[in-house]
Image (cartoon, rainbow, N blue to C red; front, side):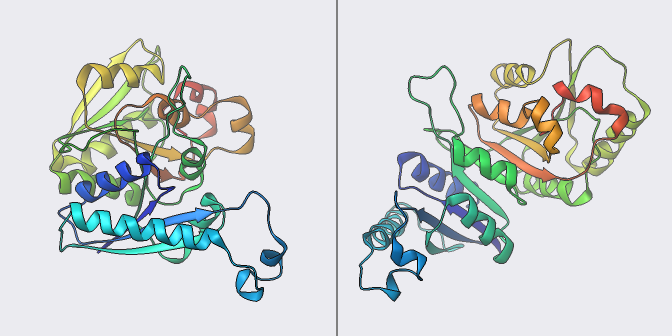
Length: 296
């Protein structure tokens, strides 16, 4: 049984992501845990000494959070009737990123599914501060659902790669299982800039081809384009249903000099976007080529 964490702030975006998750995993046995965190503007003295149970001061935040979670359970029951799905709720006085970090370490979730947040009046649509932070720090896959995106069957998955990084079997297994379960066509997309593939890249192509052999993936190469715009152009032209990327952890120095392509792509993405943590390191000899790579 899969364990799925569904953060919510009771917004329409969050509810949309919950609905997407229930449809996305509709054929699988799942336990969904719906999380709401709340943090008062000013930390009260009763929290410092142990929380409202240690004082006589009632906490309206607890009641509001639980009422909101109870309403979500009622709404789910009215809209969905899937015997494969069970639900729990979590209400926590904490920041969202810290609570998710603690929960993923202790409760062994398989996925996090959450909504993106639109920046009203801005030229770009951002994932939202919380989503960006969770993607960066998460040790499990995160599925971000664009604001207002209506679920449709996932028939095609695009997986961009520069072939410069090695992938662990564990991480590739997640993508393989996902494509198998969804019965989706997998496209491995390489944006080829002005250089020839080196021996390591050729070896990584072989590794991917062997690993995904049963899926009969398509290997697509786009030449003369730069990241991350090339991925957006591919999505606009080919209309895939899901974008999956490996999210490699950058060192502190790397983050000072370049913006993550996962962040850049996420700022504009118009389709569901899954990131899978990948801690494999890019070799030093390729360090100068990474600025336009599909790594995080």
